[in-house]
Image (tube, rainbow, N blue to C red; front, side, top):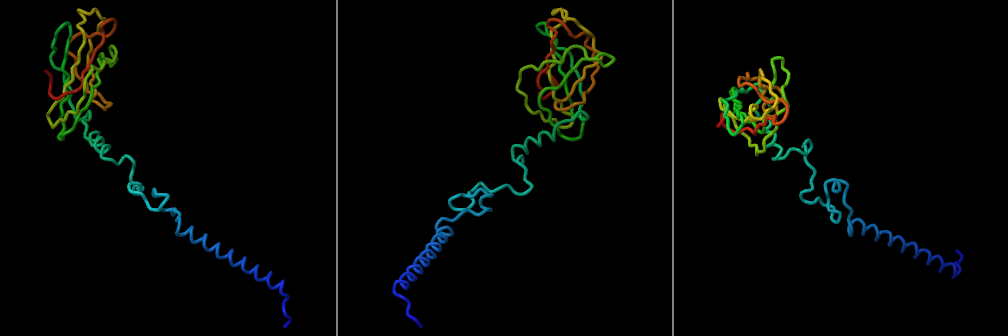
Length: 221
């Protein structure tokens, strides 16, 4: 076998050394990526992972499948109140005797639980005077300032609201005589009908406004 010239042998050795050095460098970089500075997995990123460690951070775990954002203690309480409210079909409305005072005519309007379950009312009832044909007389009553509270009605118990207006004989407002007072329980759409026997009510002009208070426990003052 012929001897390789000395200059060519040194060139070949140098090329082999460079290739080996490149291979070692590549292996070192791969090791640094997989262990020296680990990258978070896809599962960890979607679970709220810490970018530095790749582990999920406390409190960042996604909700269980099927859980809704509203499934909280607060919304559960609100839902219970809504589900337990008194419906129109479970109530009876009545208007108490007038309580005159300082030119005002004040009437207690009571809602009584006629069902066999306990339910609640909260807020202001709706009210409207109507004639024999069902046409409304005058504007809707205004809500008097107050702080509504939930009233729990066991079977047979009542809540009441005050219905007030200035005496037409004093205010000079235009009047009409209703046939019926429609009373709508809070959060309901169907009204209860109460025969109106207390005479004229203001329906227009100055001092013709009617007000209603928030419901409270009992049948009136």
